[in-house]
Length: 429
Image (cartoon, rainbow, N blue to C red; front, side):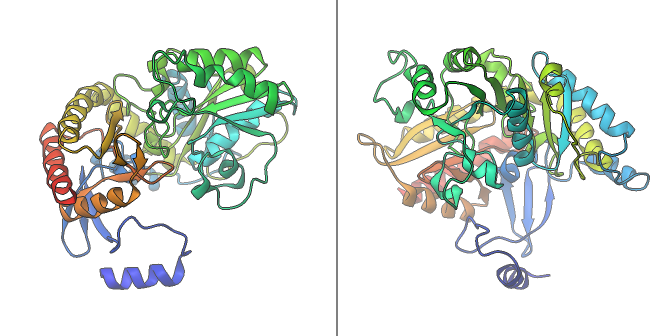
């Protein structure tokens, strides 16, 4: 099917709200490693990895081979029936997840994983207590997840789910308190005390937060943030739900879990995206006592799927055998250094930030006022597309460029991406 036909059918048969990045959408036909090829034969260097999902590269041969083999033996059972592969994956998740997290529930998406974490928090609290989330966060597209999210453009409808409160994000570049780190005394974290005293019933069921706010624009909290915030939440009866959907499996560099950089152990961790290299799988991993709090009938039709479990096990095998977490740290430093060099040439780059292979550029109209520049971000997206480079976009104001290639990316490909980005930035300037 050619590009014109694909786009015509897309417009006719899909919801019009399905967003497209470019003025002239791209229809892809093939993908291998860090390269995608469209229906017209043009090649692109993928530095967004399907929204941080293709963790070990497009069409990885080991993942593809294992999945093909499993397709010929056992394809689907649901969680009603135990099978070898879901048990193996649960055992592996117990080894990967931080601290005492050891019991898993599998679903088909990060949205479901986050909802399961929130359900655990509320059942553990006996139905009492509020859920605290962060402004600028994103948790998915179900009704509950939309209400947890901290972005007006993504919420779609007015708040319909009670008992969710939003704390200030640890967004140092745009501090809600008008302070500067480290002299700020971590006011964004300490403000949780007043939030609980004034916006909740005084009891907290859970605090859900991403180690790095993904859709929010790769906002990286200061190193002290989580220790202070989680202590306050636990003192008021709540648990910490760590949303590792974007940060998990080595993406932040050096560790398998993003939260390990902050030295805090969660009570629940949620995973998706990079867990199975593009196959639809979500995981919620909890401590035994938190998992035990979930009573009643629980099922996931697709959560016990052997195909996705095998894909995840193969993906994790590649990540571990090729030491991709360590590789993300090394190449992430090279990518960040290159971005800093480019940013120094253009005053409209307000900040370069990130960790590992999760880097971002926040674009502004004026570096003094920090007025967001969504128009420049849109223009730069079009110019990188013209260069054959795919990157992502995010941030509450639509002014943050997100750069997150597959973790098997080569050093030469990092250099190539920086050259393409540099040319695009020059034209936009």
